[in-house]
View 1 (cartoon, one colour):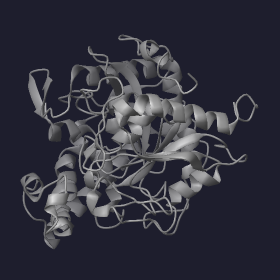
View 2 (cartoon, one colour):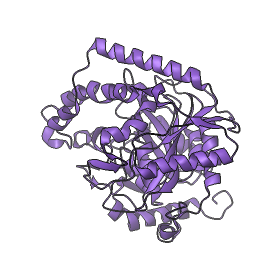
View 3 (cartoon, helix red, strand yellow):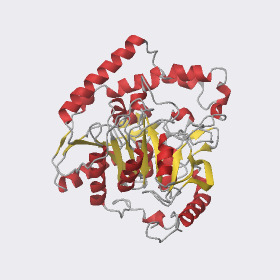
Length: 450
């Protein structure tokens, strides 16, 4: 629309700011809103497009709070690579979106602005840690943006809020200027990635964000290329203990892919047996002592107390145990990738539950219930193994909460995953209600153009 002259960047910015004024008081997605916008230009593929940035990425001259009062003086000296590339593409940065403290939760709540709510139901969470970003995009306060994902933190909020999000291969989207720093020995699991309402928009954002940056220790010079997804092998992960709507999203995606001509087979969960426990050892047991040391003496300023963090730990991880875990990870990854090749995509649930109520700890599934750590089991393996994973909305539960599906590819094959996601999105269609994924009930009141 901007390129065709149908709307000016100034009009587009104003429309989004008006939407923020209408919607954000009840959703509470923003740490900061930039009334004049940051960046923006008349050139580039994102010229005039209003975007947002998760408050774990540096913007020069702004505090990178990462959800914590302990970081209120952490003013960034320069832009993160992601922010610099968005600005270079002509995007207008509307603001920074909220996170849980240190990104260490699957809900978005902190002592800076308080709790972020789901755009469709204020009694529920939009997820975390990119929950503010997902809520802003879902409710049309932002056209898209960037989040980060060390254990589902892009994919869970995207799934909860009915948008799309990509967790790339480590290093494909440079993470320089992200806090916490993404580096060894556990940084292999954490990445930055694009989020938007459609798979096509995520693909466009990825084309802007991807590219080599020597300041990211995982970055390699993989150029953008065409990777058509016609004829790819599809392996379907089923039989997991997830809520009915999450399993139903997988079933619907598999049926659509089969109708599109893809051969579908069962994915054996034995190939990733133990992956979640290895991830938890690295992400919880190994990292927690460092967090405890960082907040020592200032626990009263934290949302996460030392007692809460200690309860999450199952024991300390010494050098021998760390080496053992990394070796097991590498063996599992090598065997899985040997089986997959470059043209297999795994279809899996996007999370174990749909958006849950604030404070909820247990979730009903067929035959019983699960806790949060069990709900994570379908997303954490792909962080551990460094594989790209894309969430595409695919249905809703009985309460109208969105349910997405994960498309997981081999490392460095984001273009293949994105192409399949766009084709799947087209096959699904854009009109949805409680049975066919339609937003007609909210689109008239949640629109940046009024």
